[in-house]
Image 1 (cartoon, one colour):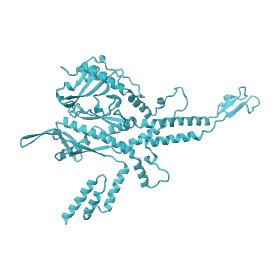
Image 2 (spheres, helix red, strand yellow; image 1 turned 135 degrees about the vertical axis):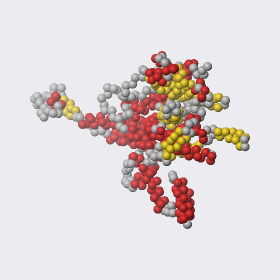
Image 3 (tube, helix red, strand yellow; image 1 turned 180 degrees about the vertical axis):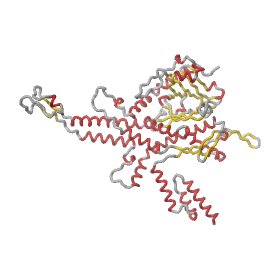
Image 4 (cartoon, one colour; image 1 turned 45 degrees about the vertical axis):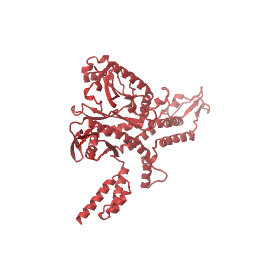
Length: 534
């Protein structure tokens, strides 16, 4: 008898409906933030559609997000795998070479860029690390994807999605495509599937979308405790119909993924209590941006009023109004005598300086609250001209960006752990990877849980465990220049002279910079070569 059937799926759909209700406010905020990002925020502020006043949409908020994204792209993370036991050093070195190859194959740099846009706008990004059984011609491989939080549903009130009893990811699939993908289950009866498209909030796009021919396909993850051990279970369903259930799959006796974790990693910008999602820079800056645009509206409206003169004309005036209004006419006819009371200019008072001051203060407020000061963009004032001083200001001003990027590195570590666990579970046959220096083949035999014995006595099992250290694979030009300058200074000071190797190593022991271990190795090698020659 099947463990997961229509009754269980119906209960899951009821749970999904409760989860959707719990994150309704978050979904609306994400949709609204996307409008602010696209400079379509006047519709979010609220205005009369018949209003003919100018509606400026300045890009101060957009510019701030673009600069934050540029900082993130200068520091794309790269993993280094460290063993916890000396016996695992060799496999850790292999994993350090293979993980970047897997990330490159999954297009991680593009995923990282898109995810950072999402994180800056909405306060969180979500990365899915799953096993794709159809990849590599049916052999299967690891797949990394960005998950839209609008499609992800968890238990309301929890802060870590691992604490959620269930986790749902909903996608819209065309009925015909669904029929081709799963003909043995749905056949010709896809029209009767009680799917619908009511669970996922929609973005306000420029395209006119029609979802009438689509149904919701739900990936349902949940956890069970079996024999004192938590197991991750998985079910894919559409409407009331089960497409796949890991509980009814004999090959998943130890759980769908043996690491027993949900295959989603949340990366939060500004943390909120009671929810795994944070809030982003648009939530922080939208108020200042709104008043910047409203004050700009006042300025533009007054500018138009000042540049387009208006006149009072007496009802029985002798002036030909049509000729007077047409600027092409060199002559304007007048009937009778023209008096000063027949036509009079409407005087518009100059705009008060307080309006421009308020506008300037709001712009400065947005810059300050977002940490996007002028020097962070390469612009300085107040007589700062020295290159070193400018660089120092830029480096000091980037501490907010470094803080944000550090949070992404924590999430990236979890992504790498999930990749290693999927390698441990599924890489039973050797896989070939192109790495620096040639090609390498790797399987999971060295990282699987293995039994240990001594003199025929079982000592239990050993499961290799690794730590992930993240470094920036791409750095800013300033970081590269400072690193190059440090190398030249070490050379000029004689650090690489074999005769002063002891003093150089003593000095390096008190220093802290990236690549110090490599410099120490070179100095030691030089000293050893000198001794051999002597």
